[in-house]
Length: 365
Image: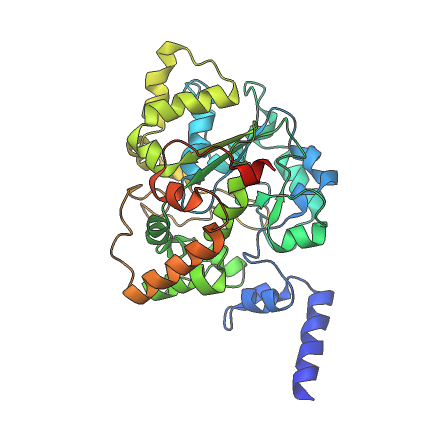
C-alpha cells in the first residue's frame, strides 16, 4: 500500500510539475526523473529531430557533427568551422555553442519548444551571413526508415541521415579504452551550478570502476551502440566517417578530406591559419571558447567548469591502455562481440582506423 501510494505521488508530481525532481540533490533528482520516464541525460531531448521541427533549424547543405562523447566532437566542430571561414580571421568564434549550436541540448529544466527554437534562431551559427553553411552538434544515432518515432527515441536513433540526403553528417570513432580514459574525469569537470540545475546530473565517478560500469552496465550502448548503429552508414554519400587516430597521425590529410566533403575550396594561403587554430595548443590556449556556454535567463555560464583543462585535455592516443582488470577486459570484449560481431570490419577498424571497409555482400543485399 505504501509503495503504491509513493508511486502515485511521484506520478502526480511529474504531471503537475515536470521540473520538480531537479530541485532535489539528495537523493539526486535526475534519478527520480529517469524512473518516471525522463531522459538520461535529462537535458537531452529528441524532438528537435522530428520532421516538423528539423527544418526549423537545419537546411540542405548544413553539416551535423554526430560524434560520440569523448571521440573528438569539439575538435571536429572547430575543424569544420575553421575550414568554412578560412581560419576565421575576423574572430566570429566566441563560444562554440553559439557558432556551432547543439540543438538537442536543453538550456534549463522546463524550457519550451518555442523558447528553444527562438534561442537557436538568434545564435551566430544561424544568423551569420558569412557562413556558407551551418554546423551543428549531436550525439544521437541514425534514424531507421519505417521505425516508429516512439521506438526510435528509445534507441536515440533519431538523426535523419537517409531521410535528409542533402544534409551532411560527419562521424568520428575512437578506440574504446581511450574513450574510457578520456571520459573518466569528464563528469567531474562539469560546472557545479549546471549539475545542480539538473538534479545532480552528471554525477562524478568515485573511481575508474564506476566509470567502467557506466559504459558496460548502466548504458551498455553508450559507446558500442553508437559505433554499431552508425557503421552501416559509413559509405553513404552524405556521411564522412573519420577515426581519431587518423586525425592524430595525419591532420593535414584529414583537413583536406573534410574540406572536400563539406565543399569548401580552401585557398592555399589560408591553410597555415586553419592548421594553427585546430591544433591542441591553440585550443588549450583558447579553452574558454569550447566550454559550451548555454547562458539563458535561467542560467548564466558554461556546461564545463572554469578550471583549466576541464574541456580540452591531452587529446592523446593510448591513454586507456592497461587501466582495466583482466575481468573487465573480458567483459569489454564480450560487448565488442555482441555489438560489433555482425558489423563487417568494425571490430578491427575501430581500434586502428585507416581505409574504411567497403560494404560487404550482405550489406549490399
